[in-house]
Length: 312
Image 1 (tube, rainbow, N blue to C red):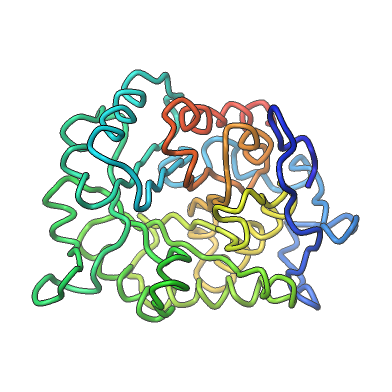
Image 2: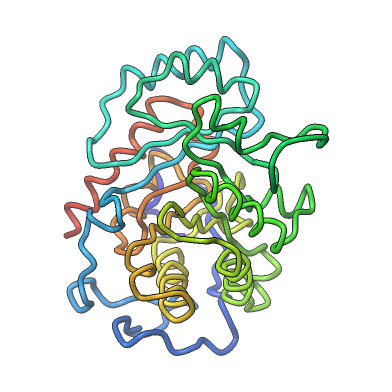
């Protein structure tokens, strides 16, 4: 991938293929593709497209950055991380959310600045009860969470959650007032087989078939081959999928939902590559893994919204 994504060293490159679909469907007339270069589609400049606004990209009008801490941290390390976040200077026009491990949510909620909201990393498909090891939406709300991450690839491919089940979990969380970070993304073999769009659209459809409203949904495109691998989709590769996702929403849900829904990118995002990614018009923020465990670096990613302003 282009060396412009690196900072202070050479970063492993993403696969040098587009691999989206063998026959790429015609997208909306508002999006024009200029030509293919080395199997990556280069999009025309945003000045040639109908403007959606640059920072006011969604119903809330804000860039969105989430930090998924996954199964990491101790009481001491999280105390340090929260301290770093509390002292960081963050751009005001960004929605910032962190998702600690369940057992540390109360610690984080009681000590983290109100500037940053809290998310669960998963929730049960319905009301709580005799479901050993699960966390209910009601419990997340009770402890102060505003969001929940659903459909993450580690839940899909390690735990074995299916699309329909994930869609039902999203519907229940939304019905109870939680916002949903709805994750989609293809595995390496699916991209190589030209099935990126097919996979992402199938996962999107499961959400669309179930959710009562898109008002509190943020879609996170996370190519599985880029999660935790150090391989990052190029800005053009990520933009290409984000455009296609927005087009799918327009055609299958509504033009309003397509315009308002924030589509964020995840997959080895860090302080060195976030600025270039943020410049792309349809990248409305990030879902960050490992780099979100480092307060100063996470702040850099949050503040990459300034690159989007400059790109305007």
